[in-house]
Length: 455
Image (cartoon, rainbow, N blue to C red; front, side, top):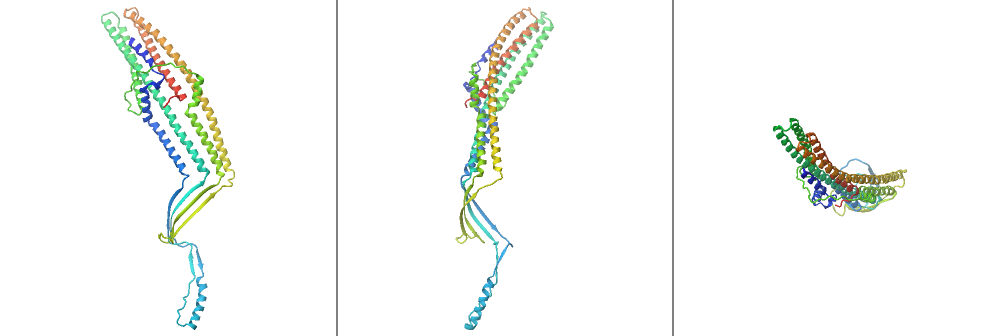
């Protein structure tokens, strides 16, 4: 049993400065490289980068190839009185020729011409180039896309910090489960040895059967505790490996170089760090900038839009690409919405209201973050005191158990007193384990709240 106490006290050497642990740092890096949920966040960020590139390219000219071929019937026609204009003149000329030059050929009679407005067949093949000269929507949309890209980037950072926190917590809980398992394993060895001693004494008629039954019940109780500890250990291993995207039963290395350092904190410094470093607040700043650009976008809808366009191609009834059928043109297009019945003003006001909502939300989040820091600070203070109290409690119960055990071996106390002393010491050992790792978990929580971990 003394070995158990030594092992427990040695685990007070687990460090609060986790950055000093090469083993844990390597596990964190594996999680950052392999975690599936983080990869999904990174894909969203990559998608935002592509959307930003798309917005940038809207400033550049676009060139398209267009081709059309049609066969038509009917439609509007226009009558050209060619015959009505020429036939009287031709008749006069024919009469003159008959008199003066009888052998001359006659001018033919000309029919009136019907011109169809729709040409059939008809084809047009061309290249069309367009480029914006001034368009406020493109300018502001590009800025808005930049903002959303930064928001997605911060989302990745937020999840990274949350993942680091979860990996550290999972590692600590694994160590805690290991110690609980070790505690009950060694205790089971001790109570089994006690049971053998009771059985031997009973065979020699030195004790009654009830003490054997009590010893057997004690063994079953510790076995039950050990089964629960084994389950917690398996679950802790599985959860830790899940975060690292590894096989659930992969072995976890315990860093034997870790040391526990009880740190002192200044509450005001922690509160300041929490509102200075938190990515969530930086993200809200980006949303405010996005909404500012949205206001400018809506206000700019009253500005003109100017585009330039050019095209070159071929027209005709047949696909003949030559100088007779080619054409080229260049032109400017201006669009200016002069009156929208107040719709633009309403949209601007809506965008301003959205920005005011985000400003209030940021203030609320700042206060909420500071409140969380205050809770974490006092939880750490309580955890520090809990370790000291648990150590004192264990020390006293250990002394009490040692005395009762000696008396029990000499037959001076009954098994019930011995069992109570053993259970009290066991509970105190568990309390110390919980206090030790509870302190570390509170430090991990505080580190996350102040965003102090450096990637």
